[in-house]
Length: 180
DNA sequence: GACAAGATTTGCT
DNA sequence: GCAAATCTTGTCG
Image (cartoon, rainbow, N blue to C red; front, side, top):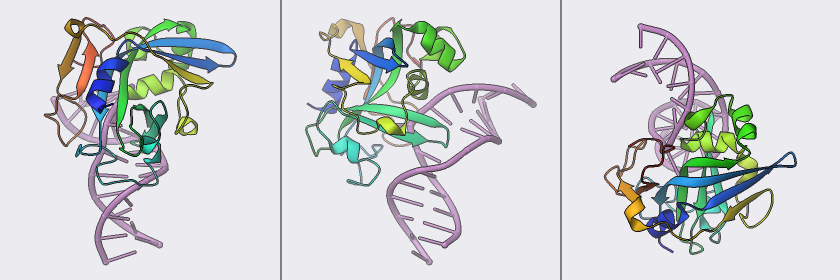
């Protein structure tokens, strides 16, 4: 599946994280597509030691460390060996909110409205790189696609290349979107 | 073996 | 609004 299509489909899907026997469930409200022909993608210059996860089968997780203090996570959308993935930019807590707020140290929408915040809230780090999202302790629950009318395509942010690409998608009216 | 850059967040001016 | 924090990977010598 092309990355931009996968990015749209992931909106509304749920992530279920097992933490110390407790379950944290969130809904994906903002995503961004990256593929091998994308100048801003980690796979633009081909396969490297770091991005091997992006060349795995769809449904795997690609986690990378950035700016010396943050993790960001992507869902590989495949097909295998194409180096395409979708960055999870923001999520909306469904259950286990206490766990998230305790882990982030802050409450409200500011706890999960950013790529690195999502990882922090769900305790996602380098150990989950190449993780299969159909297995514990982190699973992706597929949901019916969101109505096109409720999906907004926007220019990308936070990068220095291919900024004009309309590769960022978010659920209209969601209060958890990182930026409008 | 060394250096610059980066898909961000936070706090201070 | 801007700059700092902080480290891994890729590229170059």
